[in-house]
Length: 403
Image (cartoon, rainbow, N blue to C red; front, side, top):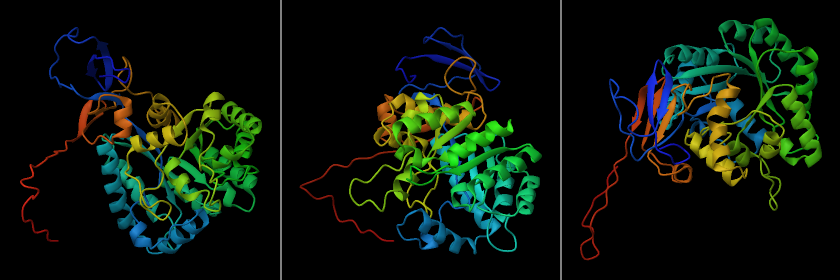
């Protein structure tokens, strides 16, 4: 069943959906799969992960905290992070994402403290090659004020994008110009953490849009978070959103982490830690949504499931079910520079089949039974067995639980 609840048969060939027709109208293929009871969606893409941090909440001894405190907790723990450590945790997280339907991921990776600052990046670039064919992985270097020499070494290592956090720099405008300059030199894209705060006077997104237009930067540009836009006067927010659209900048909203980190200094009337998603859509900005941090100092929870992200966009961002699903599927693929996927003729055959009867059920019930297709081939299948037992006279029986 398709998202509009119509029933269709699909033919997949050479990594594409080559035909879509009412049931029974397509000739039999070499092999067939009955997806009765499943809802067929475009495979999600994760546009903003931190695989080098994933799974470190219990290890880093981080308290519940705001963004500056989370940064401090991570920096303390990062002293002990090794290349093998990053590789092991990142691979485990990618397996979880893949099982949930993700076939493309963009991850940021820190310039780490110590004598070998690119050890995390090396681990992720290695995983990118190892997983090629099963999952498309893009790697962006993340830093605040790392020297040009280190960023050049990262580019030469083979990262896909240069990133940074201008709002944490002494001179945000200079930081943005430097990243664009180096990205032009190495022919890579740019993905910045922008305006990750609730101050309506934050300037990262405006500065980035201006710099991209002024320089005529031709590569792909992404701005993540952009939380301050959600605290900006509506007219100013629309003006900034239109400037962002004109500059061709994609925006990634990250509800789970920003809802966790932002607004802690407002014990009542707590503002939502989200960018202005409706304003961005109305202005024509390409909007994607990601899971961001997964059980690390920046967010102690998270299931590595884009449908969880979509559900948060419905409840906290007031998007429709369809808009939210688009943000975690083809909206995210667009930001990653990838062609559209889904159950439409001519689309890439990256698909997610969820055992659910509607979009509402798929997002609301965290349906675990899923089949994941990459380029028309099944690469993951999850089946959950649920059992119920009869109760006799109000007693289940004597059970000893041991650990």
